[in-house]
Image (cartoon, rainbow, N blue to C red; front, top):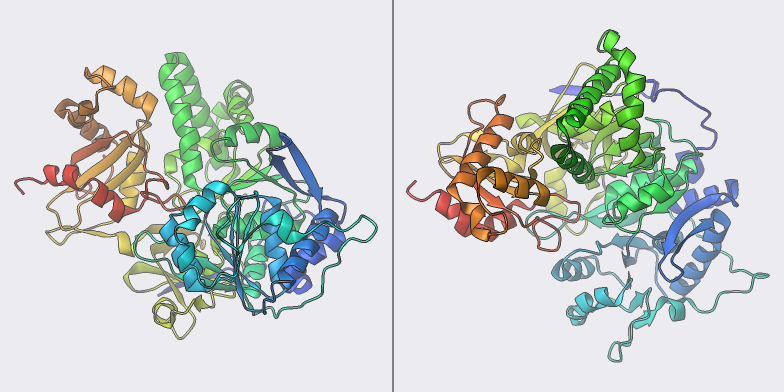
Length: 620
């Protein structure tokens, strides 16, 4: 057994600026106590920025204004006659109303059940019924069309509230938020929050995991779980009250909720809500954030766009970019104390001005820190952005740990790892190299599922993450695979696919990759090509990119396999892809091939392309 506990006195971050602006767990006690303390400390400071589609402009809100709104939502919830411990569900995009409803419910001891706005209707119905949610808050008429088919099954729901006005004659439980909230109080007599102090160990939220197979499980997290985790994460790197955060991952995602909501509130950092992922590039230019949390898919998209632009550009431009990345990476390694000084570093000021600053300008020009989590960040992508001057700190966690377990540090950043454990969290390696975690952020258990809870957390409090890992002498954790995703081939050989998939994705032609071979004699790859790269590649091979049958052309498959082999050249002998399914339809949430947290859903992908896969194994 290997064990590592990071002591609380380990130096964190590049500097330790004044931290008096940070609210401690002792001062907050609960998640609503955190909100009240922030209002008390900085009532007139900027809290949130958001885009109002009706006015077609960005608006802002102070903490004092947020408190007045929360009081209205609290009063409306009080009229519903709910009791502490009752569950209420929220299905909104990121917006101030998400925070208002959340804080109003938490203030009354209610339990929040967040829902993904892009989730499947069947999943939403299951979660509402499984949690026994009494109130459901959603946003649009389009969402209602998804909900109405399952509404008769939602017998536990006594009130449905829509942010937009939805005209429905046959559903007495449905009200628009404007009617449900009632008229605002006059400026002279704003509503006051009714005091309620839930216990810190009381259940605060049930967050359903977006499992790749089967029904999701409800993760029970207490106020103490999340408050501890937000503060521990905040202690690792400097997030200053003068920072600006851009929030675009859904708040129903544990990573965004803890880091982008409660942690930002704890530090007094204002948050701007992006309009959508599709408009993220434009919002980066408008908001110009200094800090954000992300998942690898976002960085992969930006990296792919850069690579495709370079392919279409002159050779000199490509050479200059590669030189900038090489020297920028050497500069990073020198700053981290892992490489000596080199005369080539004298070129950096010029290369920064000619290349790096232009790329960073596309991200707003002020971004000084990003944290990537939710899945492994491909090494080539991490290397590129870090070399260009964007510190990407890869971290690790899961909903069941509130969610952050570990994160790299600005002055001790090992990009191939997910960093050392947070202060107060213990990690060790268990059977089958599984990463085990113990600490105050571990969940209370799974909702109404004691068997699953017992299988996840042992009698000594160690939570089995299901991920395989190793821990270095410095305490840095490296995730090496996922126990449930190990491919067992027909010859008994066990293959971890994730590292292979990340390597293949280094080729800018590929947007998405899945390695398959469960119970089969050899491995195949399912690859989704991006549009600009596919057009150029098809022309080089001599086929028409606009003809569907070109995807299955033997010449295309041969060239694809060669490109895959190039990326896997440094892998052991088992890592050979013998055949390939080439696709140009992206895997997404809408077609059921990715989870709401942007992870591929392996079983549905295999089912969707069962015929194509079967052809590649004919005769074997």
